[in-house]
Image (cartoon, rainbow, N blue to C red; front, side, top):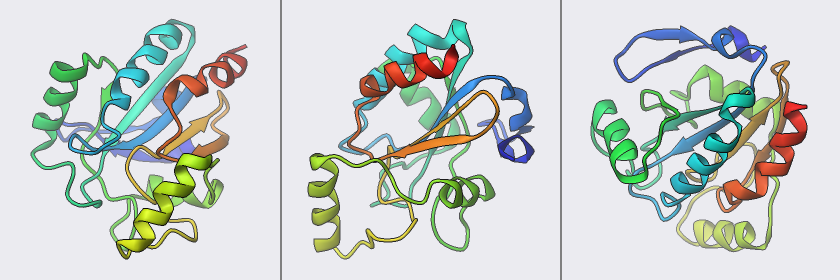
Length: 177
């Protein structure tokens, strides 16, 4: 169950995800230098709209895709706060694929092996394949892949990086009822 996993905060403190039990979660692997980085704005908007109703965003910077999340954990967190005004939790940098992938991401991928895709994601995946990236299977394809988790800790769905945060608003609203 998702609540059994420990994650590291930017200060190095480990916390159990049990802290978020009973809340709807959006878990996102992010990067400060990615073409999708402006999605932080949309993430903050949905966070502002639903945070008082039991919604949390868990932001996990990842440097595995063209090293688009350089810097320390503190620098990344500060960048998000200063540039996009984020107030949701940014955690320590993690790996989402490969032998050093975090246990949380191994679990998320096993529970939702394929992302909800749109035409934009198909174009993105085609470009990534041209660059030599693997886009089949359950691996995370790029930064800003999103996992939606219900109040009971069940993984509801996985969304491609191209899936704009505002498109998730009605789904989040329904899960909060």
